[in-house]
Image (cartoon, rainbow, N blue to C red; front, side, top):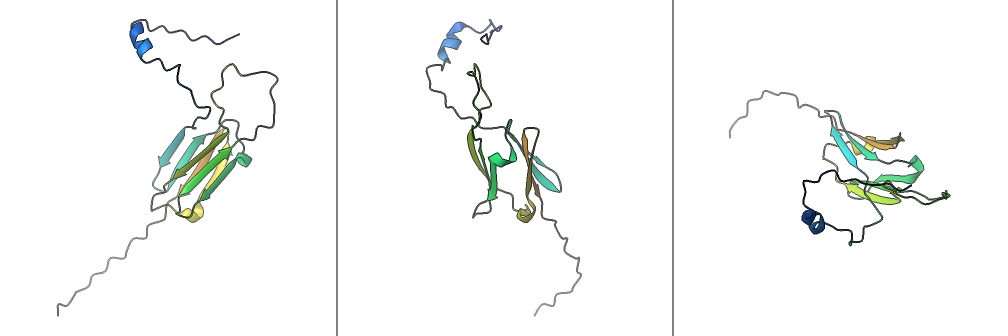
Length: 140
């Protein structure tokens, strides 16, 4: 059984299909996982789609510039008894460096993998409000 893609949008002339056809181009074998970043008043939360990945497949660290580096590599130990007809989540290697905002508490960053999603939680540094000081400045 082979997957079939039906194009029900017949309003687009075939000339456009031919013009934008890129089947002659070589497609890379690697894809990049989707990343969401959520900001709340207390933290930043990064979510990275990682189907089939375990915590052993990740290397997450801060580099010498204090940037967040996420490396992901899937060790292909299991061999399947067939071939994929279609394979879209075949991340084998991935690396992303993310510049962190200045208000990130770099000492408190943590990560977990659950249900095919890597979640990196980056708390914000708590802002200490300066005491309001009333003081008369003498001009000399």
